[in-house]
Length: 351
Ligand SMILES: NC(=O)c1ccc[n+]([C@@H]2O[C@H](COP(=O)([O-])OP(=O)(O)OC[C@H]3O[C@@H](n4cnc5c(N)ncnc54)[C@H](OP(=O)(O)O)[C@@H]3O)[C@@H](O)[C@H]2O)c1
Image: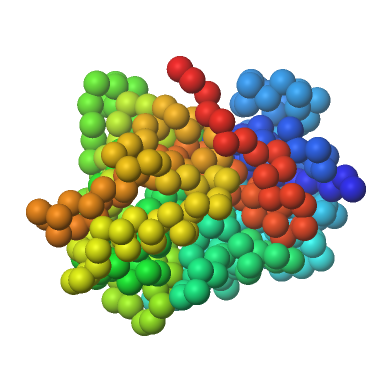
């Protein structure tokens, strides 16, 4: 089986990473790549690392150009994807890397994004626990035809804490997450705050005080992980640091009265012990972003801080792989009944 694929936003970071991974996927033929202001250029003019795709030219992103493929990836600025939904009604599988189809609450969309609300699609984080009994989001992805790939920070924090929420050993109403993030998470378009002269040699906080757009996505995911209706509240602070890719998320939450150390650790071991791409590190070990670059891997370190009465979870991902393109392709594999790890690797690039 060879599936024809179109990738929109192919001149950008997320689209480029989707293409890099798909280029090594044995069941995929990349037939169409599209862009906006750079349409008409050779793909390699904007993605010079994608040598095996040097024959492709960026086409304009229009419904006609995207139609007629087995799979379409949308990697566009938020607010742009929704307009293609109707035009792609006959496309068997559409995967959106943007935010347009992630949120189930119109009120949350209005509060954090604004503009037209589009219906939620199946959330593309297979390892995420959903409710009691160990069920995972993977089950919902089987046979899915419309998939919303996650926000990179959102899925990192949700994967960090979902085991404790699902097991009832942490209190989700008092979560604090501070993230070191690389500027590729903000995309390729020019912004003064992302200039090398603003970033190199500095750590720059942004969206401080409950304004980051990934907050409702985290609340939605952790509420779904909880065994009963839960009040999920999070103080979320990202800090831009001088690394092109990567997220190091440090998340803490209060330990529920009576939960033992063994019960707490077992929650994470049970959730991720059999997973390939989300790995709990041995006790006392914590991840580095350097170890997940280029990999579809989330490395999770868990500490139980008894004096503070909180769990501390440190998780490293590559925002462009496990945070976006890898999650999208892993979800695609599940939806299509392909082996889940096809085209993906757990191994990072080092040094
Ligand atoms: N970067 C990440 O780590 C990451 C992680 C998770 C999710 N995402 C999501 O992925 C999406 C793309 O992000 P990105 O980081 O790849 O951004 P980006 O590097 O700025 O790329 C944006 C892409 O969209 C195209 N584009 C811009 N305006 C458009 C329009 N009006 N209509 C059609 N295409 C348009 C651009 O084409 P031209 O270059 O030709 O103008 C470019 O190919 C966003 O929704 C983002 O939230 C990104």
